[in-house]
Length: 283
Image 1: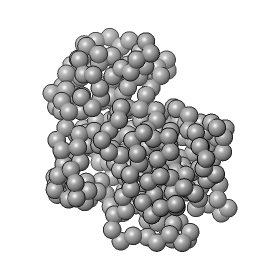
Image 2: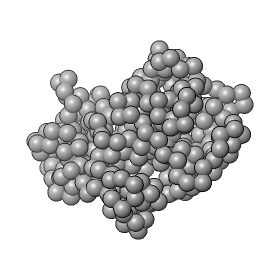
Image 3: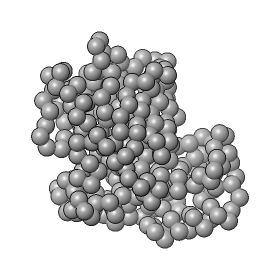
Image 4: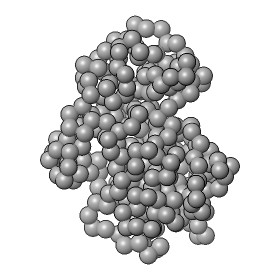
């Protein structure tokens, strides 16, 4: 299923996609996407039943989609997790770590799948298409790679928008990764049962129609199960937490010469089997 949030009479509302139409999940009584996630299999069964019985109320083309989750407890992203992207970083003088390199994106950066991106004060605005993961209703603590899959609720498309100049102010990257509007995600959460193998998904990023990034999640250095095992060794991954699993080569800072996004640019990130998000840079 494709679970989403959209505006209905000016208020955030939960929905499920049925063909190209949206079924309102309001009758189920879940006040937020996080509440639906926490309800687990019971909630998904109710969504499936309602989607079968209820008539859609709104076409997708007419809907104003919001970020598919309101404000998760954590939004974590891994750096240099595709080999060719790590090679890009090495050419720029950035040391490639032997261990998984994680940083926080503050959850206030989250934006909808078609919201504008505001550069703020950065002069080096960059794009990064990534596969996003949503942690499910059971908190993950000290799980093994073999167990990790059952802790995934679903997947989404992410653009890890980066202020490259501010990113290098600190080795934690957090400030330059967390500007307001620099976390567009969506367009919905595709539930885990619909993705047979998340490690065989093609992903692409376009800027003004020009293909900048193209790869496949099969190229991840540390796969999703390894990521969840690693993080949960240190701390608990809670329901609704978000993970961005890494970006492939082709980012603006790695081009010769570098090509950063400018006001007026339109960036589109897409992943096969999940969907696409598209955001305009507006000063």
